[in-house]
Amino acid sequence: MRTLTRNLFGLLAGIFLLSSNTQAACLGDTNATKAYTFDVVPQLTAAKIYTTWSPLLQRVGHDAGLCFELRVSATIPEFEQKLLKGEPEFVFLNPYHAVLANQKKKYQPLLADSEDLLTGILVVRADSPIKSLEELKGKSISFPAPNAFAASLLIRAELAKKKIDITPVFVKTHSNVYRSVIGKDAIAGGGVNNTLDNEAPEVRQQLRVLHETPAYTPHPVATHPSVSAAVRERFLKAMLRLTQDEEGRKLLDGINLHKPQAVTYAKHYKPLESLQLEKFLVLTSQ
Image (cartoon, rainbow, N blue to C red):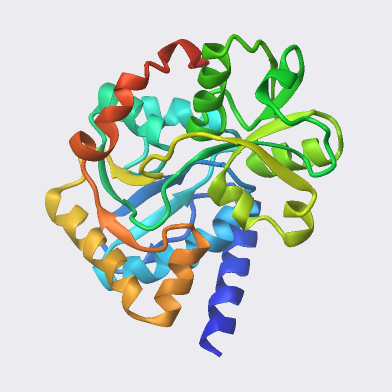
């Protein structure tokens, strides 16, 4: 019954938030004096994000005495503009976004998954004759967005180092990438291990991983410098407590954050600066 209630809450919350143009309802402690904005990078559809993150923030907020306003931008570039303006107070973002956010607005990573490292993947159709990266030269390849870390930046950087010129086509989400390859709109597409694992079996079985990048610490939750150390600590403790019961673990699994651990910028994300991915960034103004 509790699982049914959780799923129903997530679905109803998603429908409400998707259809409402007004300020989102408080997720968590409705008696809290402040609602913290919580933005999630739109790797997946808005419906998927709302239905997985809403029940998690509801429970974490309740346990920590915090209230959250979940926000999902229509596109990754729109999300990036809000991030670089310093709008989100809490934010779930990709590793290279964490670098940019720290450099531009002093955002500090707080926690990330300790179980599954993040790798970029290039997929082709399962029946594709392509066996090597060199065969992609001159071809159109789908990516979710220019600045998706592992799914786009890492892969494009690796192809450039091998002098494999391709035509990137940006299709907004990882799900769109996989379906563009299955539908033969692109000969290959960039994604990440976690999002491919989340696809339905009938999608996964139609794809083959052609190439996989080195692994990195995955997406963190980071906070704006205006968020106090005390609030950060309350949120962190509530997230870590989710691992202690089955319902909490299911909530974490829903957002691919299976075993959260505390992280720091210096240890986990500053090393990404040495990858020199700046030349592949595409930052648009709004």
